[in-house]
Image 1 (cartoon, one colour):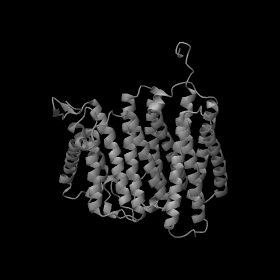
Image 2: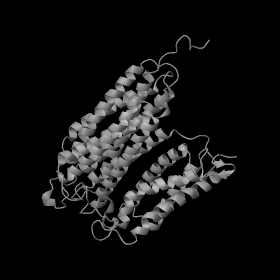
Image 3: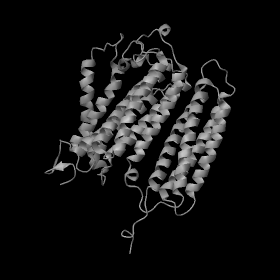
Length: 451
């Protein structure tokens, strides 16, 4: 009797592990589908609707296949995964069902809503049926708490990248009201009206709700499956921070709490825009930390005692984190005001010098754990890539006139520079957590020492 069967038959009732798999794979698939949907609608891509639809169906079937292939799971897990994806996607389905008048749905919405959910369930079940015969079964299931934390961190990185596009396109005020969008409820603003800067700004808002929902689910998962009380409270802090970040983003547009969509009654706030950018990076750092702490290495550590000089590596990692955060603040100022370029460049010089020293130190000596050498190599690579992108951003913005729409070259390079900066922060967080965990290793006691 194979995995995913009961008395030789497919099981339709997923177990507790099946429900966890459906939750994590469902949210991960939703993040993937949203990212693909966003990219497909970019003016430079403009993928045909039929191709986008095929891609979404492939994602749904693939999610069911991933869940159904796991040991002990089957059709029930695939169908439940499809259900989770479909329920999350209701947040964007309203964009296709919005009518010509604010907060009115098209007549066929009564069929589309249940139909989309049923289709997701059937697609997930189909994936579970065909997944195992086509790809076989993996040897074991992953740690679902750690996997969900990684999904949340990846979703946050996508949100930061989309936010970078908003800033690069100077579209932060393309939608004049909040939490509504030109009088429409956020989830009912028609896709047909999302053109120009409105597309970037409104997509950023929608993706923010996805990140908020994912963070809330992660926090709940931590209280159910994570025994460490401190990690549970980190999940609570993440929920509080993502809510505060959403409010900051809205108040950046309106300046005060109001439902008015009249520009005369709103007071856009540049300071809040910069605070919003900084808090977004801090939130990404927190989500990356949760992904690292819930990983197997974060839970179990490395065998054996800490290598010589580990405390120095931990200290240097902490200093690097502080310097990167300061550099991010300076970068946000440059992005929003154009001021402080020299100070930002000076800070970048200090940061890359420290990264180079840390990387060389991590790579040196055979007593270093292999994972630390990998961490140091990634830190070096991302750090120098960020320097190259920074020089590119300076070169494309130095001679541009202050009026008119930014050229494509500036948008691409500036957004890449901001996004890689966020990745650098995440890598630095993981590097510091690694050395913090390593320094917690103790030498074996005489009773534990090999004979």
